[in-house]
Amino acid sequence: MSTTYTYVACRDEGSIEAYVLDDAEGRLNRFAVVEGLEDVAMLAMDHRRGILYAGQGGASHEHPLLWVFTVVAGGRLVLRGTAHLPCSAAYLEFDPTSGDEHPAVAGSVGRDGLLGASYFGDAVFRVMLDSQGLPQEGQPAWIDDASGRGMRCVVPSPDGRHVYATSLVDDRVVIYRRGVTGEPPLVRSGTVKAPAGSGPRHVMVHPEGTHVALLTELSGEILTFHRDAETGELAEFARVRVDEPEDELAPGYVRGEGCGPLHIDGDEHSEADDQGAGLPERPMWAAGLMHARDANYILATERTTSALTVFDTGSQPRRRARTRTEERPRAAAVAPGCELVLVAGELSGHISVYRITEHGILNPTQRVVTGARPAAFEFYRK
Image 1 (cartoon, rainbow, N blue to C red):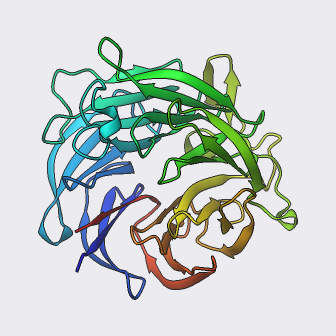
Image 2: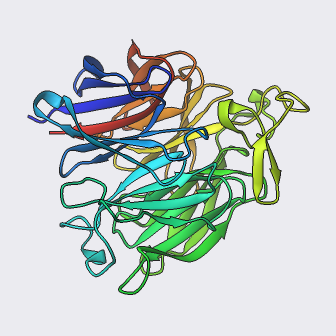
């Protein structure tokens, strides 16, 4: 019988908490805590080799630390080494291009890597990894610093052919193809414009690679696209809001470190002097986007209302369920079994666990306290 280990990055606590997730009961049982990880805010997992990558977040770290852990017997984490990321980062994703995962990119440039989106550095980057899963010494990271302002998320497609990244400030999704001999690891091949002022935040690709879903932070919409597997191009076919009219949310605003507003001026952005000047009391502030139950459902979180909403997938997504959850739910994830949903509250310091039924209903199974400001989840099943 397999065991699902769950790792939670607690940013203000400076720790990663390790849990066993009981799939049958829907309960987390903590068994270890790794401390001394200042500002740890991002996690990414190499599931094949059992390697967990953890990164520092925030604008204050020009070259953030990257911690590399091996998952050993019992799910415990052993530190293998540290490195520095090439610029500040808001998102990390493991990017496999070797082994059997992505036969479509067998001729592409480079090895497995770590993809990163830099919100304050306005860049997308890829760190090359060696055969042991460690950053390659003497191999500079690839950086695209002309992709857009406020890069927020970057993910590869399941077939490995393409990579998608979001620019929250410039309202677009950037599409990359894999580079071939004589080219960089990723080559920009197109962009998709989102509605002006919508703030594209989180992008995810359907497990079969047929569709792409995009969550906009400032307008609170889920945009769904058909994906061309050969070219990576996207064609929008559906759009749905994550809020209810009675929420009375105003359009959101671009934020800086500490959740205050940013001033956008040409290619520069800086935190506003007056954090409260002219800002709505209840702005839209969408956060997480997930697939559940074999991608039959899409789940989204919104932080002003502290809501978790379920939509079914199809030609026109429909709202199936909605629940109030942890206060300011920035981090949320669906466990490998595709039925258990974990939501962490930045302000509540708790995780709520739900089981999503075949009809899209959310049934709570547990609420557990965490370290301060839980920011990210990762899973490892063995």
